[in-house]
Amino acid sequence: MKTARIAAWLALLALPAQAADESMIPRADPWVPPAARRPSLLPPTEGAALQAQVNAKLLQRFAAADTAGYGSITAAQAQRAGLGFVSQHFERIDTQRTGSVTFQELRRFLENSAAHR
Image (cartoon, rainbow, N blue to C red; front, side, top):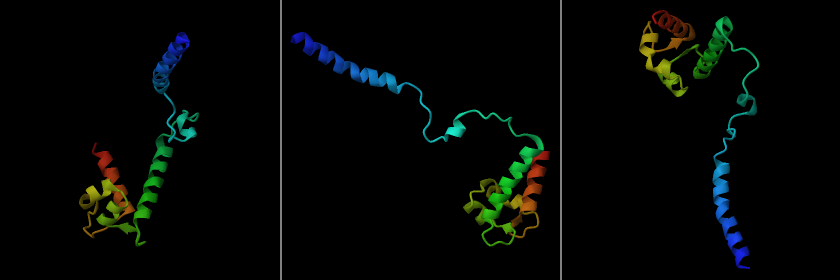
């Protein structure tokens, strides 16, 4: 009887150690979609195709920031939309000093900035 009690206590003492060992096993992040957990079978986008994706995404974000629908955004609209780069460099982008910038002005600024790197 005493041996059974000792075995039971030892088994109980071993449980936390076993649980700690299991917690050390790396697991997939549950917040990452399954498709993102596996490497892509497609080659990475580059060159003109990558540039087109970047332009489309930037245009989409710019259009979302243009809540008035004028085709331009103010520094406040850029900041509210999370376009931190635009709001931080707004005065340099707004070369005509109109208080708003168009998508073309933003693209020109980005292209000129990239050329000077």
